[in-house]
Image 1 (cartoon, rainbow, N blue to C red):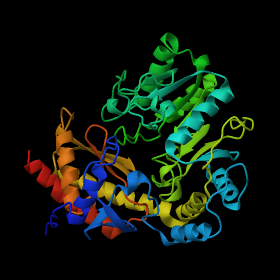
Image 2: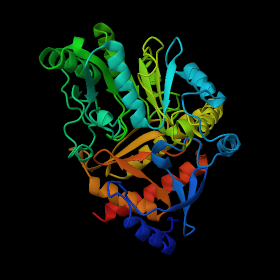
Image 3: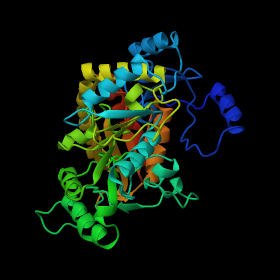
Image 4: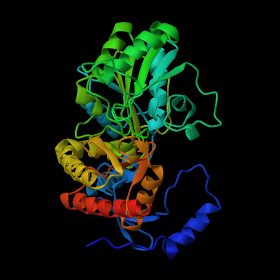
Length: 442
């Protein structure tokens, strides 16, 4: 039985959309008219009472689902004590969070952390810290990367031209190189035994370092272990070990931007752990506090070596956000992260079955609940089909499933890490139906 189609938006949603249109900045990239009223777990309801499965999770933010009772309780208890005390002073929740982050950081010898409010702030902090520690002026980023929209982080962001249009010049000193995308490789490999990761690192060492960007001038590489906005891309297995070796050879820091792919989403606390590679700095945000604004720049102690006043923040370490983050990480370590790995495998298997059925699906890839489904006009040419992707996302909304696109023609599958078997199966059934509808409309 096919899922029923809802006529959306409803009357209450329409009225709010009209009010919003008169006062909102037009810069927000909104895809379809969903107006939330409440959420519980993986399910959300709009102001007209329509129920949806949320497989966007606020751009991979609602790690423990909407309004997890343990998170809500911790925030309520903290709100009764105090709402704010700046980082000029101390509070228990702040220090406890730093202790926890040091314990779970992907470093052998603990970590020191700067707390802020968002992913872009965590990246800005990492940029400043890398320059301060190395005393070097330049950086290398990757095509397809997304690191934020403030001027420093925007200088690394290279996933869509519209994100940078009209804002040149940005921060000087950033060189971009191709990210190793196995489905759409930009660099040729030499022979059957060669690998794309090796070709990418060789391109940097033999071309970029020798013709454009001397390695002794480079403070750091800034890279997403799994690319998010660029298309949910999983690099080949040789890439990060070889990149780490290149960094070590030249005294360059490796900054892992785990804002979207970290905090248990891949079934591991950090995506970089997939390759057994130890970065020097990790950027975290999004899912770290189950929906409250919090970012963290986590570094090896010898890297986090700057003096008082070198960097600061008024709202970073907000007590409500710290309370939420402490509970979120506890939940991740006590079953939620394992559920992400289990349900990710379930969804990948189901999506691969849909790929065998629907010719418009060119590729299915991911780790845990960080999954990308790429739509193409032809599997042989791999020409992206953004129009079909967009029709499918819109139809999914009308059938009760919230999704977000990324890349040129990719849909990201990022439900809360608490998603159940039944909810995964329901989402797969809706996807099967709406992909068929989108294909029929071609």
